Length: 276
Ligand code: NAD
Image 1 (cartoon, rainbow, N blue to C red):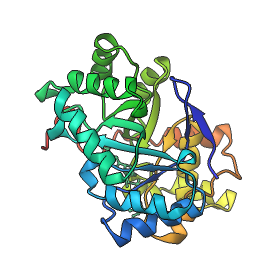
Image 2: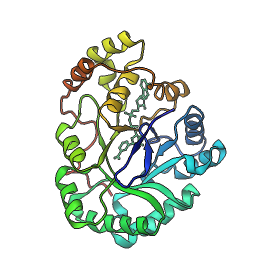
Image 3: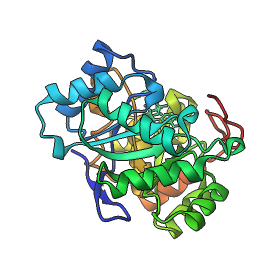
Image 4: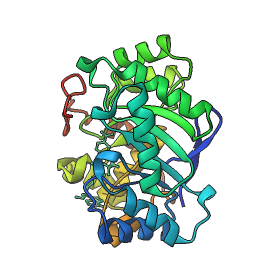
């Protein structure tokens, strides 16, 4: 079972959640989310883009855990940015999920060339004021994008969900978010299955703790006060990835892992990402 963190509006969010990017709609996502809930995850991260919100909703209903014990996140896609279109996209996501409220709604990417993220965030503020969502935030925002939100909008985003793993650990962005009371949430926390899982420093630390490299990486996120949402469709890995609350990395091990940063992204640069 995960622990909770308190967001800047006072609500609690599990520090470890389950991501469903590239998990197919229908049987695959239903089985994965049900397994995740069965082994203790209470936070599920989806997006309109992932086209699996219906399956996520069905899994939630079938899992038999009370709605209020779950924390459900989805995101407004780039082509729906804008005030009215965001309000509409939110209602459509809620309908697909079969829910009557959401826990967290995020702007998926800033798409700065479109210059619509301020009015989009104002739509999120409206949804928040109307009680349709318990918290609002952003994803893939750089410091400059966050500065505009903080100066031009009323509500502070509770999280900024960004690519973050030992080879791309974003120290400056993390410091900015921490200084401003915004939780950093790591997507691609396992480098999307990439080389960090085979890094010899991480493999050695894992051996010393009798844990796997994936567990050590997730533990590093948690001890850095980051929220993480690893994805897997393999039942044993879904379980492995939440089994990270029974060991602790030493200060020295944390420093060794912090020093692995190569400033190496897997995904696009938010400044350049304008896919519709
Ligand atoms: P991830 O870092 O969670 O990596 C998932 C991959 O790692 C799996 O497909 C598998 O190949 C491997 N893996 C998982 N568990 C493992 C284990 N125990 N041992 C070895 N390998 C393992 O990458 P992700 O899915 O891209 O990110 C997690 C979640 O973040 C997504 O599912 C999605 O919800 C969210 N996300 C958000 C954005 C965004 O723009 N906001 C972008 C990408 C992902």
